[in-house]
Image: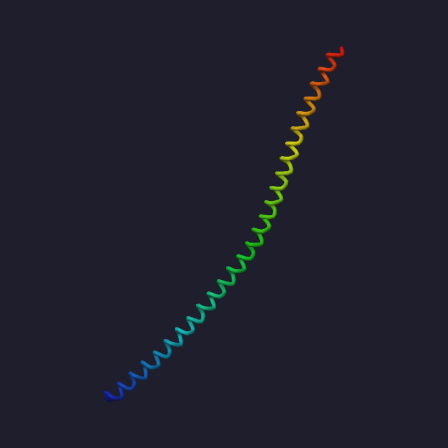
Length: 101
């Protein structure tokens, strides 16, 4: 059987090996976590870039629609003014016709 000193030496050796093994495992876990985090960040950046492009496209379309709306509104306003002018001229012509008839 082993003496107490030998047992203590074995115990110390085993503890040392366990500590080194634990440190090695922790460093590998840290490395893998860092790699996973980097992959996630890269994917988030890629997604953000795609969404930015789509948002810019939607904003451009919205600006075009807004411009079209303003043009249509101006055309409608102009048409309403023309109709009022025509109605006024029609009344004046009718009055002139009544006076000359």
